[in-house]
Image 1 (cartoon, one colour):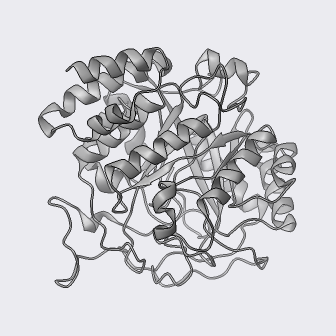
Image 2: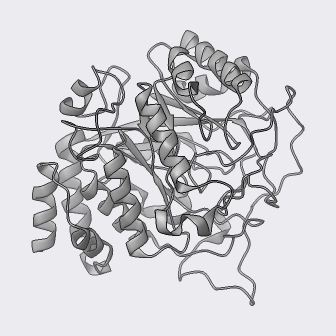
Length: 428
């Protein structure tokens, strides 16, 4: 296809596609799907070879959030039967992180629900970062704590944080339909604060919330302009008890086309396959490795992922290799701009396809991305008892609700009941 040849050529030159070209990728037929994957795979291999970076999530504080993000199981008013607990102690968080590192994770992502951290929270997370780095030489740490106040990004960097995640999630034009307690501009400002403090910025999106193709292209083009070092792509996990519980809009084929579009628009950044991959890609997950160069290992914030060993087997069986701690993730032209670090953020004039003049990083999560969505209230020190478990957070749509797309597997949504915040061993 002329379209795919053009996109490959642009991707190899780090040149921005047109909006029409990006939209055309999303409009390709299922018959052309393997051609789309192969084309985007050429761009992926140019900049990242066959390496797959592993990331591991530690949910420092679960639930108890006053923000109203419609996709989030931790939101204000959520009836999802997830684990709810306040801040983990640094030693407990470090123990959870060590399990992920032992499983091959190169980066640990520390996430806490809430609108944004208090200064006391930043102190608490700083101690956790220090504990993790003391016990795990060479590990990258990304913090994901919500909206930042002035000076907080610098304090996290001083504590040893390498990156900060805050996802844009959806297009600016439709953001108010998803969240009302903060704005799209608030999210952009937090990413820019992280960049200004010298942190590698991580920012991505959530697909499957009922958005249009134009919305998807809008948010990915906005991310390119913001220029993160890594872009996590989350696929909505429609938790029962949340406003988007009936939004089953994705097929494996559409999920792959979305990933391909992101790769063409942001050819040389770490594109991370994040929350919802097991639910929506299912047996097609190995094909996604030809598009992304980064995934989460094991479980997410409030939902279970496939077994950690299954992740490792999938990578090996597909002919890819786990990226080692001594390997620089980003291509040389981006890594050099960072001074060899894990991310970068020079001026953002050209976007995430050209690191001669720009940059930022990523972290995906609970079916809505790992950008926490609530709580400026100080949390109590003790870990609360978790609520009664349910084997699955999803059920079949009722007759009065919109039906799922053909082939949707609503039975695959499982609430996390192990790892951080529990007495059970983590999935790593």
